[in-house]
Image (cartoon, rainbow, N blue to C red; front, side, top):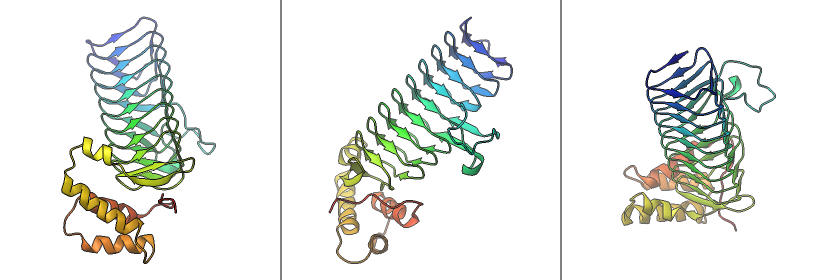
Length: 268
């Protein structure tokens, strides 16, 4: 093992040979750090945390008691192949959170960006790709192969279906089941999620100005409440009118890129 001189490891913790522990990292009582775990500088590991697998945790991240990070994917097809879990810097992982590495069939890596917060009981399944500044409230869960963009907020007890995409700056309401893709800046809610409009609160908090918001509103109305053509055709028509990049371009590009699932749309 390679433990920095400035790190502090509690006498009851187990750090297995091969693990890398960075400067000023603190490992609490009864925590277990597996042989292929790498902890960046200033990481704080709470009591009874389990860290396993080929797992990298970025500088300044904090993991609270009883979290289980890097244990094998909950996928019956997983055969013990060497896959990875990558967690960014300044990520806060609260109690009882679970995160699994990728699978060979899904690209081999689960990745979580910087400055994220995962509240109590969240789950990030195999092959998920989670952006930066994501907030997942208590017991929010992501099935395998989910993609979550930057600044997304997942409400408490929400659940994202496998292979679904959640666009940047979107808001998923509490207790919402998401089976379809959610556009960037969208706000969805419901037992089976429907598009309830744009995430106006999130946009204002992040400094989007009035012209940007008005332009996105107009694009949203044209795409989702237009009377002619399919969703894809209306998005193509809006894209043809845009002269510069921005929130509207991001939204229509997300739709035109498509995915393996349909889109959340407003209730009729």
